[in-house]
Image (cartoon, rainbow over all chains, first blue to last red; front, side, top):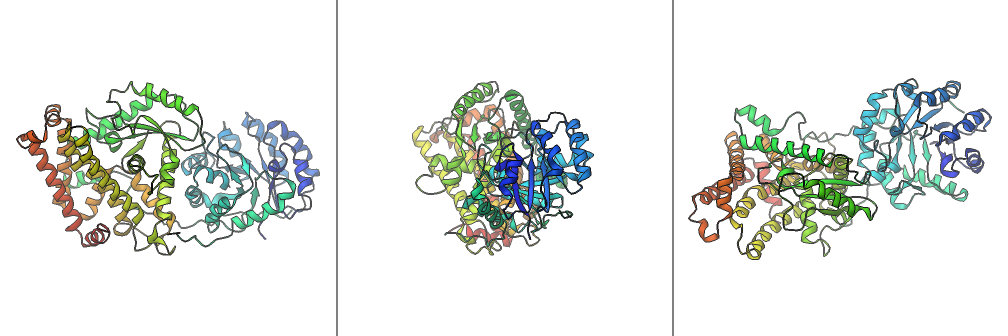
Length: 237
Length: 372
């Protein structure tokens, strides 16, 4: 069964416990625990072992985007990653100042492609440069970001072609021109379906749509629909 | 929790078009192969590269809107054919949310670019301003597709280059990808999604042809509007550099059938990427590549010799001024104009030979798609 779940930050910004409560009875089996601000990280690291994560087949952590000190951040993450060898950490490439500390984590680091607001990380060329510096790192393909940058989805397809063997998981949502994540529209679902044939069904999917608790299950259904291979649309002419 | 296993995307065998060799340009290859040099073409390319670098330094720390803006140049500079008298035609292309600061940023760019010692944007009103991507993508054909919109869209496809500052190159590339995707997605030739093979992008070709005819009609209009002022030079340019633009567009479309190295990937995405590679090349490079593939040696060398002579003419201040000053009545008596006119007649004849005599596969495609 495909692994699909939510980013806690999408459901309850800065409060992973609240997000986990929202997800308690839902039909998700993957999770990304967000600590987007470095101030949020200690609480997550301290609580991790006591969290009820039994239903999750796939667990990721989103690293802070304002840590500043890569060495210190990696040192803080390492004990948890050592203790839980299946957990991966998602990192924004524009936040990395020093690559060497992250290289010690090898395939536990997932580099996420960025939206148009960021200085780097939107294109295959940008990611090639990052993976050159972190050869062991994997890819978190954010299809919402990719669509915001290139709505033809060709850049996303090129990323899959170039880095498919590094793919760890997918982020999915609809991202507007200011970088805000929304629930998926029909248009977004149709665009994401263009990628479905290029993504193995075993790749976990993390939903980043900022939705209310009542919309969680429907958003999970939309994510499943998005990654079902659709028949290519016929020209209207 | 279960152990996670290594995950993989399906790494598709994306059989991308290998149409263009990345290592060196076709002109360089032809030059080496036939021990021929085209000095004015080479000079123009060097001059263009130097000017682009100068623009990068001049714009410098100019902060374009993050990820949304592209500073794009056109004309001879973008074609790699800059001469001493070239213009600096540019736009600031915005592909994002509207922002009242865009106007101010454009004014700042204007002020900075005045430091570049080139002629200011021409009189048509197309350049030196803010342009938004939406009409370029959405208004293809129909009432909203004005002469202005058509011209800008086709010039972006056929003779533009982004200044490598901020994210200009990526923004230009991705806007043009959306334009190409629109042409391909809504092309009636591809009504069966399995049938991108054995067809060419006809919607795009029709727009390229429409643009070529529009340039020719506008040339006639300028003759009237400007009382034949500058007519003779415009005439030669129409017959040489403007025609070369049309050739790039035509060859771009035909190449999907006649010159594509395929491993069976005839998908819509593969076609868009194939066309994108042409958009990233100068018209002369596209033509030279085609000559290398399909033209007999003598014809290939003749066409490039003629274009080299054209650039020599544009770069010769004395001859250029003579031609610029001619009226239609004077032109028939002017040896300089007659020589230029003969050069453009020979260029026309050589291109027709390329399209109708050099290769039977090309000829069939041109005959089939070139009329209706």
